[in-house]
Length: 571
Image (cartoon, rainbow, N blue to C red; front, side, top):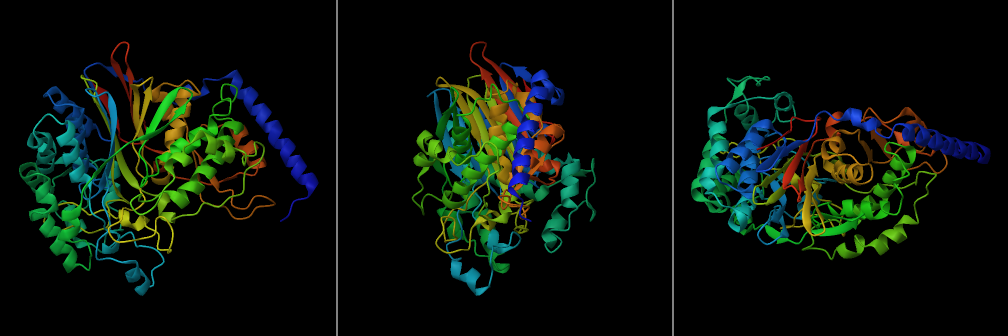
């Protein structure tokens, strides 16, 4: 349907009116979002751990109390997460981290993501007439980088013996742990019915475990014990590697002993932009972290002191900045070993100034988000740990979708990731599949410094939503004055995909989804501006953990949002 000029004029006037009404309403109650805070921040001096599972947080604190540092505690918590939350992470997946080292007063970035098999080529997918890489099965399996990431972190910064660091996870895997709701529901899905090893491994006497049932994972305990005793080599060239190699050969896979032997993590320099006096740090591609920096650069020019949280203008400007950044994400973000990625240009203020000219403050821009539909999903854990010496770790780890590929190597007790499903099969693009190449990654840790000192370590889970989550958390704190707990609990909004044509200049505006708490007046105004709305389940928006550091009093502030089972604690 084509709208007349008069209709469009009326819509524009309505949009302006709704903006004015909403701004006035919100200005009368600038702190309305405080009612969404679920609890106070956690304060402590000696150490802080914020993870997505209470038992993992306790394990991290135990390691700190035993004399370990933040790096030791982060590894212990991640190993524990692989035991109690295998539906979102584990040693079959990849890892990224940003580490503040108190001794050198520097930030270090670790890219512990694995590469595609040497022997699998793009021609194979053509021969199979595949338009995309199936998420389940052997074709999506890339080298799991998590374990190598642990040992890289430990060698560079760790204090305790790795056997002691992994001991809590080994004990819980062997003795058992009570199953939480989310894990029980995930095990009960039918996605993995074609993979008998999965059902066998995660059942109790043949039954799907219910909430509160005690699940033991003896095979994983044995694998972790072998890693504790034999180091990274047992996983990448020893007994575990050979088991994976044999299993993949028997099940039509391509991942081989050579792929595992060749794997190495990479220390990288985090990249940053300054947003209103705060230096925000992300890791460069093959992840999507620089989308956060691009969005912040675009938004910095707008005066949010006079734009209220949850107002039409707030959300409109945010969504338009996201559209521009994600167009670049679709084109440029990929493995830098295979592409010349203009990272510094993409995150420059000058580039943002040029791109910002495309934003219409009164109307939703028509654009199409290119890329893989699989980017919209992804299951992840994020954790952050800080110690008494001032070391801070921001770590994120994932199998990608659900438990992973469905491939559970015999006797090892963990599933291999399906991160390879994020490759593109269209020839000539940055993220096109090639052998021994790292796929585009959605998982991103973040860090903020101020005047050269650590200020905030945080992350937000949720696949393609993660950059949006990062920017919303930062704006909530810096622009809207929320503390780190309020910033995580405040209602969120997302923007994905393209909509069906709904009128002149409305093609491709995408779909906005919102949590409860955004005023109805805002929704009406945004609709009049050409935005369109849909529905997304709660898990899309979470979860978040964060640690803020107060250098004057030497106090850590911890937060964990209410959307998942996360837990912030210190001592």
